[in-house]
Image (cartoon, rainbow, N blue to C red; front, side, top):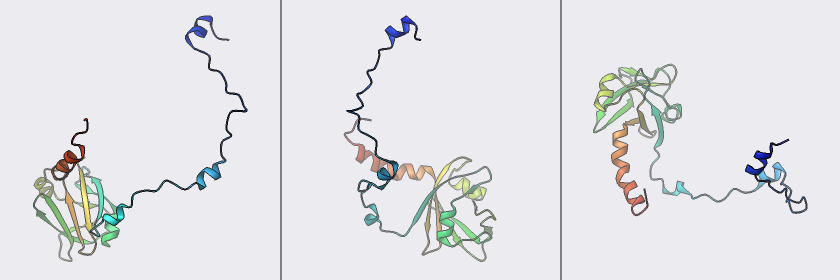
Length: 160
């Protein structure tokens, strides 16, 4: 039983009449309904690139097994690594010094992390180009630069 003081503070909610309540559809019928149409962004693609996001671990490794599969890179695959302008480019190379790890992780050497001012926990954008066998690593600063103008234009006039 409710205390009299509580009954004044908590208003009673009338129960709906059973005749006015619509019965719920069975779960199967709800699941079979068509989802709303989605925009077809696939028509806008101009590249066969495969993208992924990864976080740099404490040993300088990044992981995205889907991208490695797209590149057909297996554990032990030798890689060469070079610096581009604000990015790292990795390619399969039989004479490469670095390798894909046994657990399908890609190691970014300390010198490469310094090129991009990367530290443990930083997120990176990975772009795989399967036709060319290339993996490109982009640091957050580059993403900020690339997206800032696009976002500014898209949000222009909207309250922030």
